[in-house]
Structure formats: C-alpha cells, structure tokens
Image 1 (tube, rainbow, N blue to C red):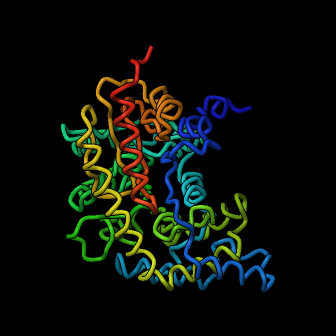
Image 2: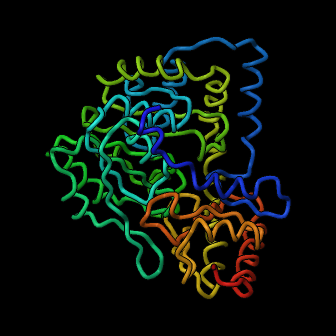
Length: 391
C-alpha cells in the first residue's frame, strides 16, 4: 500500500456514528444531511427513467440537456455561464477529487482554510501534495472569522492550489465579496489556482442577497481565471444519496476533465441525471422552502444552545450546522462518544475537521421536526448538569 493511504485517518465522524447507529434512543445529528427525503417529483423522474430502460452509459461530461440546465441555473445566480465550462460528476466528492487530479502533482503545495470537511484536506494528501493550512478563528461569541492578511501572506508563487469551502462546513463561516476579491486578485498575481467548494451556497440566511445565494467566486471571476468551483445537488435539492454534482472550470480545461472522468467513474447514471433535470426545473418550488425551513431550524436551535450554561456557539450566516463548544471540554472525540452513550445525543467531533477545532462539536440542524432539536438541547442540558468529569 502507498504510505499516503496508510497514513490516512479514518473518519472521526463515522467513529462516533458507528457507536450509536441502530440505537433507537439516540438523536442523530452527526451527518451533514437533512432527514427529509428527496421531493416526490424528483424521485418519480428517476423511477420513470429506470422503467424506460435508461440503464446505459452516458457522455463523460453528463447529458447535454443537464449541462444546459445547470448552466441556465448557474447563470441566473452568477451571470452568463456556458455549458462548455461544466462537467457533471458522481457527487461533489467526485468533483473535488477530479479537480485535484487535474491540477496538482505529488509534491505540489496545497493551502487549505480550516476547519473544513475532512475530505478537502485528505484528498491532497492522497495525491501526494504538501498540505499547509490557515485556520479560521472563533470570536468571543463563537462566530468564526478569517484573517485575510494572514491567508494572503501564506499564498506564494509556490502555492499551486488554494482550497476554500464557503459557506463552511462545519463553522458556517462565509466569505464576503470583498474577501473574495482580495483573494482572487492575489491568486492572479501568484498564479495560484482556487478550488472553491460552494455546495452550501443556497443555504444562506442573509437578507441582503439579491440572488438567494452566498457570494461566489463566479460572480467576480473571468471565464479563463484559474478557478474551479464545485457544486452538488445534495444540499439544496435534498439529493445526498443520489450522488450527483458538477464542476465549473475554464473552458479549455473541460475536455481534460472529461478524460479524467472516464478513468474515475466513466459517467454519472442516467436515471440520476433525469431526476436532477426535474429538480432544476422545480428549483423555485424546492429550494426556497428548504432554505426557509433551515433558517427556522437554525433560529430555533442556536438561541436554545446559547441559553445553556457553559455552551459557546454563534449564529452562522450559512450552512446547516451549529458549531459549539462546551467550556472545559477539550477532547471532542471522547466528548462526542460520551454524549452518545450517556445522553443519547449524536454530534460530530470538532477535531474531525481540524486540530484547531478540538473541543468543538458540530450539530446538523437540518431536521424535519424542530421538536427534535429542542429535545436534543434538553438532553445536552441534563447531561451537563449530571455528567461526571472525564477521567
């Protein structure tokens, strides 16, 4: 086995979930997905495709009609975007690894902003890159912020790729337009590629947005900028298990990505792409409702947590997570396991996302039933009052 693979750590999120899966007495908020099923019309489109016998290969880059529909959708959000800049992928994870395969060689320097979903830092290591990190920092209220001058100082001509996730998993931190402009201008000077994971862009709760999306690098970049944006149908369309995403890239890069897709997955399943076409056609009926409900979930959960003595948590502008710290608890993996066993509460440990997030916990608030969030806070509050200190 390659040493880079042997050195990979198993998912600490899974480690906690495995300790509680199958237990009816555990409230599971550990994974980053809603507990609401995919809308019926989207499911019906996938079923109809299978019944019609669409069980064969499709184009490496995706069905032409889906690429056109995604281009139209993205153009409404971010300005004109040609289908020739798009590739349909088998999930956002597939989009990320294909982009990294296209851009980095073993030994290249990759810079990531952390805490972040662990796949974004594991994938460069798998490819043999030299990974460096710039950490977000929490303020006194528990809201996380980026030191932009420190990030720009860390990006040099040696930096092949900058990896960003905004809105951020797990903290909810979201880049501002001014921050994006400063980063893009600096990366143009250093020749650094930007890989921007924007899968949570529609899960954005600020009221001052004109397009219902978080700020995107696509709003300000030229088509030939060294920018690759990753998107997914998982979050804004409730399609996590369908495994479908897309890449936006400079047009000259698209045929090369098509080659890589052939050697990774060949193509996304046709029936999944047919379902995505219906999701895009009904986006105004699906996504605003999801976002409004998630805002209600956030605005229910966070004040309840803030009222619990010993809990530090901020109200994030984007994403589907509350990122919280229990004062005096410094081992988040052990803490998360104790909460499963002793409180029936399933949260993800902060250390899974970066060493700098040790002592923090991620709570996915994407719950159909808001009462479950209240029940979870009650369990946490009772546990804090009665739990014995960690040995």
